[in-house]
Amino acid sequence: MKIAFCGKGGVGKSTIAALLCGALLDAGYEVLAIDADPSPHLGRLLGFSETERLTPLSEMRELLAERAQKQGPYYTLNPRIEDLPERFMLTRDGLRLMVLGAIREAGGGCACPEQTVLRRLLSFLILQAREAVVVDMEAGVEHFGRSTVVPMDFILVVTQPYRGSLETTRQILRLARDLHLEKVVVVGNAVRGPEDERYLASFLGVEPVLSFPEDPEILRAEREGRSLLGLKSPSMERARELVEYLRRYGT
Image (cartoon, rainbow, N blue to C red; front, side):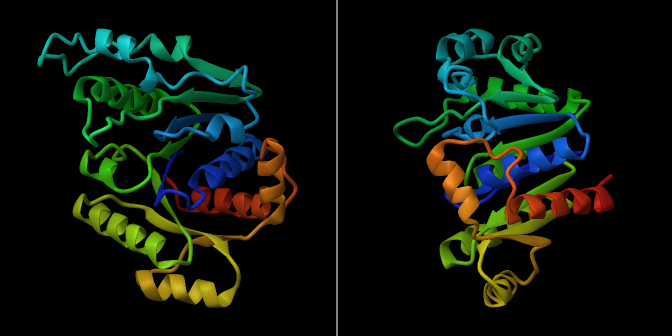
């Protein structure tokens, strides 16, 4: 089972990804969590302490340049990455965490050699994994243009019931259709009731497979810096429902 989360920044995709990791662990799965967001927070949400948490690979520019065999404008399209998971992965109680991050330049451009290494490593992790895979992708729609998410069984587009989030979600759904990606579904977040549900469905033309409520337990855990694993809250119950949905309709 390989699941990618995407959506507009700030809609809670990292939170729901962490909750799904917890629900999968509770269901007996081993889980590989991959944080591929330029501002990675998944390790914190999964309870890895600040001393445990890894520097994102995207910040190890010398290592990435070396693996890309970067020489001026030239670099390899087939960098060596097979040893990196063993060197830069955290493991705990059936959960593995890899923090990739993503390259961002001040001018908004892409540092292609370094990004090539990260993309190849992401594909390697996804394709080689024997456990359930949960990937927290970067916000927005750029990764669809690079077809980064093609190997996934499900792409979950997290959205909240406000126009900015929904416009990004609608753009993601359109790009997914253009790329002929299957099993791209919407997950609502911070949904307060039937009116919000109707607004989501009306704006997008599709209904969310399920929605997470506004949850004070999530807010409390965030403020206290606590892990979301094992959280007893309505959101964790929804995460368990999401696992059942993925089991039912997955490959």
